[in-house]
Length: 171
Image (cartoon, rainbow, N blue to C red; front, side, top):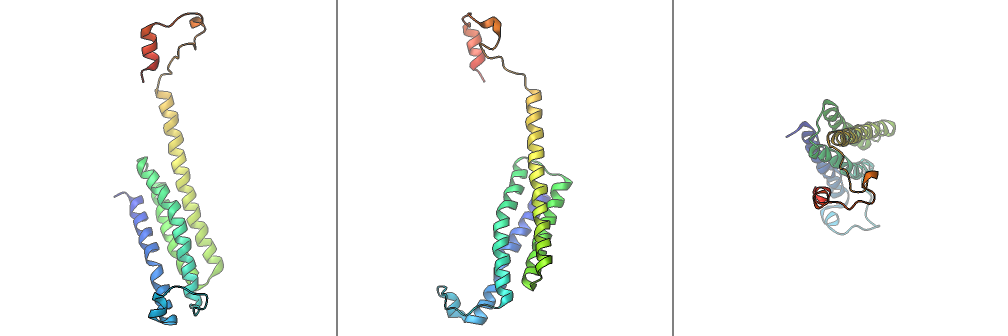
């Protein structure tokens, strides 16, 4: 397993477990049967920390989609560098910090933790496009341009031979 996939796995585990504390709070506040029932506008509000943790969980799920797509794209491209590993680790720790400070109700630090996670995603986007642009340029430089029938002014008015047609359509 690559180091990027390692950090993606831990981020998935973190995101997958964030719901547990706020559901336990829901059981404590509303009771087990009310928690198992359908939500209602008349439900007793949860503890403020549980409401904040639920928002942190929703935010983590939304951002996991972007992070996972970037990591998997890098895997498909077989592109792993120290920068991509650092970005993935940074993203995980930023998301963990975001959840903790959101849960604790520390607004400015929460925003900073979110911003660090966003910057980690930007690093991954740059890695994807940096690698992608470089590979396209290299492929273009390595391949010889194909001469299409009719591109050369000397071909004007001449009927192409069967061999020239086969060469132009083979690929």
